[in-house]
Image (cartoon, rainbow, N blue to C red; front, side):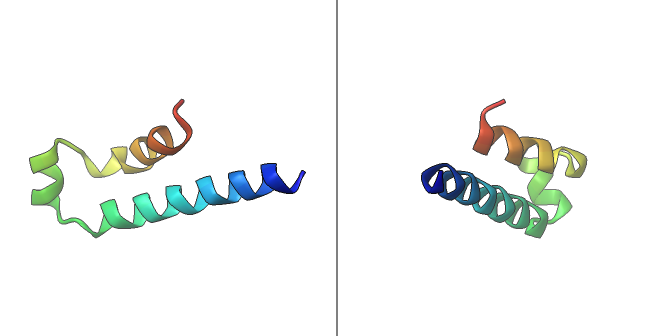
Length: 51
């Protein structure tokens, strides 16, 4: 039970860190890597959870 909780919590922390780092980029940097601001959460979710 604790292993599952630890794994899920770790994934959530990774998701939050990814979102925070992408939102820290300015519009020009996001354009350079081909990401629109409205896509950030979805990209982070897929990178962490793979769905």
